[in-house]
Length: 231
Image (cartoon, rainbow, N blue to C red; front, side, top):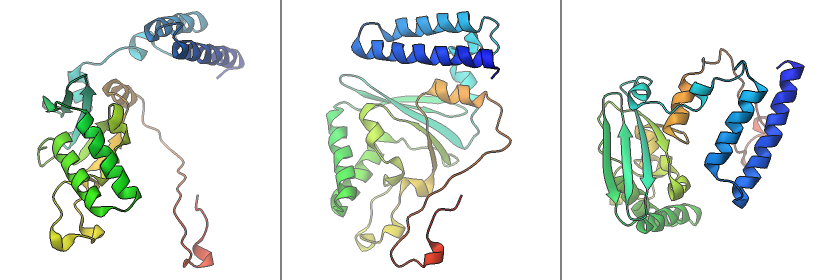
């Protein structure tokens, strides 16, 4: 940014922090906050050089979102109400909507069971919870689907989706983790916060270069030459 525009951006950031605190304390509503932010953007950047109002706040149509999907990708999201949990599955060709569970508190019990089973190594609890959750939350997807974009809602943000079990583990497979039917073996999984967020990111030009920082655990029996982080 040019120095003058950087000053404007810093000013806007300070105002965003103020608005965030006001929303948290209840002194303004989220809708009023968005309206005020919009107003400030128009004042600070009247030419629209750094943003486009119509695009920045526009909600895409389902058709527009579907145009960004290839035949092997599906977006799955859930909406929780007081009594029901609705599941939405969007692919390139269709949108499916269904009620997956009428008493959402049962889902939370299963989620806690799955997480505790992993943390405290209670394999039987983990297996039962992970397989039941998969059956309740996921539809029978077409065989061509290989990539899932998951948008969790409320307590489902606690689910390690990759560790769900797509099938029951047979007795002779118990304890053999390498053969467990983890969801990540069947699908490539990514996450987003909303369908609109996903669509807006698809409108940005792809980066021509990027940096990557990776970490891996180092165990006590590793040689000294293997220890450390590679960047």
